Length: 395
Image 1 (cartoon, rainbow, N blue to C red):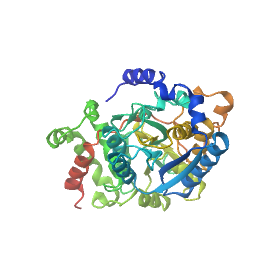
Image 2: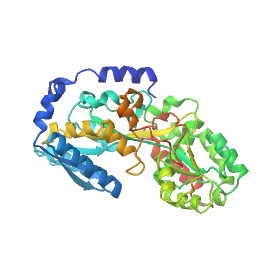
Image 3: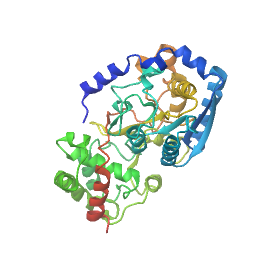
Image 4: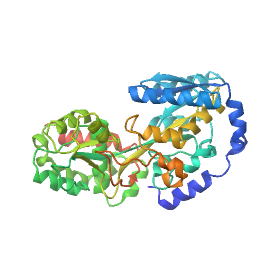
């Protein structure tokens, strides 16, 4: 696991001028004027599509850049398209900017399909919180190395009705005690649901004394040895779960509905702002509270990256820089617009820019955010899911 000193050192290096192509930002803006940027981004939510449309209006009016949202459902398909174009020697590729993180980024970085490093040369990168949010420099277990620019945050978060939960559990040990005191009112989704797997990763991290193992690949034999305290915890938790852990909900959405119906006391999400959004929509009561475990919960950042054969590299950098502006980040953070947490360190901003983030917390907001913990290496996921299925997935 990367330590704080390493992250600080990396951040210091990253803030140095980044090669000739990005040294003069005014030249980048001049080159970008008149370019069309084809932004391949997930299109599964109307509010996100509307936000991207707004960003397109802004970069067109301010910088003369036309932003075309290419609506996708699977980023892996974009990776394949870029790979095929590069192999074919196509210099003016069909993708100028892509919304990306995780395994898709690792593949593009490994196969040298990305332009850069460019991120630290973006003027607004100076305001990114690279210390309090180390996931802005570490994409799962892959160092970013300036090849993608952070855009938004996600962090494992719990929520429930504050009128029913006087003291929310702030660790997995406390959660087990809460479940024992409230049998049948707590559960988690069955993996491979993303939230269910994340719950299991969080439990594994908290049950492991030597967390350095999560920064590197692990094999089945080593995992079996490391997993013993984790399995002991899950064994202790299981009898207190909904339906005594003999059955699990299929999705996070199903659990959210069970919380809204009063069947469960605690829900979970990977978007810290989702509970407040659900309160605003009337799905959850105004007494809803949201919290994270005191020592930290698993988080990650999502990014934008520029393929090595992008036709509009300058325009793509201008768009990436605008997405890091205080205005764009505050709008994205707004629960009424999107509710996606910012990657910025608001304390670095000027007074007027900081005021854009100064709204009073809405009902359901996380009042005391905890540190974001780095994701375990990707090799852990299939092993976690396989051993869980063997022990708990058969009823």
